[in-house]
Image (cartoon, rainbow, N blue to C red; front, side):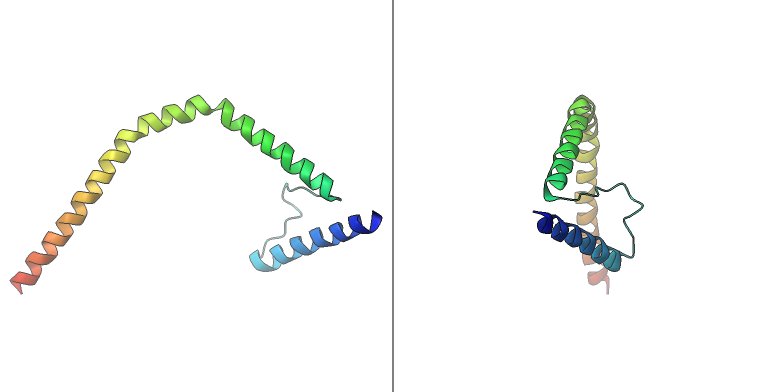
Length: 99
């Protein structure tokens, strides 16, 4: 069992080193889990998932209200984008005929 925990620790350190080499950012200063076993990592993931689910649930009404309030703006912007794309095509055709 001790050997597996040691392997996990080495694997976690290698993953952090590989991330640092790829991104140029070290994660030691960031609030990330520092598990020593697979079970510690799974517990941390479950805890963070629960906090995120609680966050979404507590703000569900706000997100729904924002969604409803922004629907008309989304609809108008989609219509404007459609009109703009048609004007661009028509204008391009006119320029081609003029030449």
